[in-house]
Length: 296
Image 1: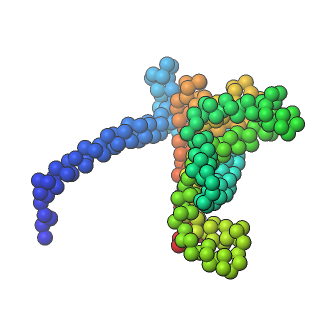
Image 2: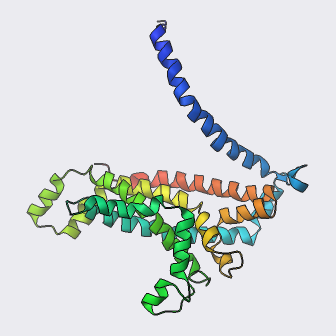
Image 3: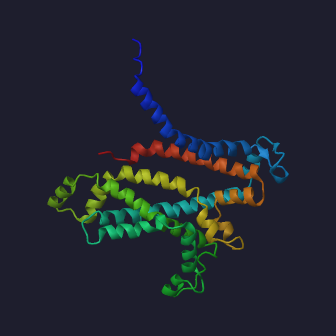
């Protein structure tokens, strides 16, 4: 059977549909896809003087990066940051979402307050937290009566920056959790109240299992984002800071090689390997989804 020909109205509708989505497609191609392919292409070259006359070196950059202690150290630092930021932000955001999902006074105001860090400029966030962490004049040391070099000591800097990252993203995670909580039927909680289940028991036996799709989605996206951390480290840790080696991420080292040392090929190789790692990790997480996610 021959396919029906499109009417004039259908053709007109299709043309307008393409016209509306075309800017988005062009934007994705120019701003996302082209940089990816160009980065992969550059990873096979050695940058020439003044960015010209690149020399093809094959897999030499990959061999150099894989045998570099700096790359593996930065990758370890990146995972340390993710281990702090992701679980901490998930735990706090889920608890806040449960409380703010109830009918309480000034609920909308609380939601706005907790979401504000998400819309704050990263530079402003870094500046405020640098003062809070200041060893001599910082509010944290003043409150606790300590003398800790929070972001100047290799033993505490990675933890301090991870806490800032978690604080910055709590509001975003909370909004997603609120959306997931509103999809849970209230009948489950009414039945649990009749059975005499406490609020904590309801949280772990009803809320967490039924919220598992949202939890898993947020976990995946936050892990991917945390492995690409750059701005907090760049703005909070100076190049003269002795703790820099213990906190610099893969993307931070990539930035240094590309924009400071003008070695675009070597830097591109680092970020390509990070991309491959993120893709593998995403595939593994997708495979594990059926074991950890409960769909109502």
